[in-house]
Length: 119
Image (cartoon, rainbow, N blue to C red; front, top):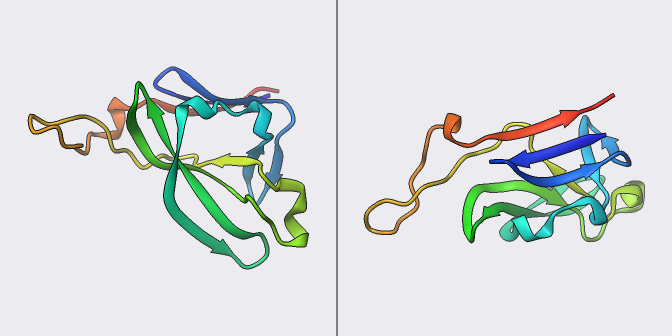
């Protein structure tokens, strides 16, 4: 069983992940899409294809940018992870509002991002 949480909110939880290049890819039905917002970020892997990203969003506010990625369409060699979602093990943190309503960088200690593998 592998579980990903962000500030106590479960982002994904499954015993059916697929491990590719050391990353756990979660089946779409095991992902809490209510806590994820599509990002404008895209990257390309030569053998998997073009990845799309999600921001971690709690209470309508982005807590972590580009915390997860997935391949909506894959190259043939990666068909087993098409649509599956993977999460960074170390999150890039962006959270908090200043007095002008702008997002501020906060120390990573203020955001609890955790991936747990249970045997």
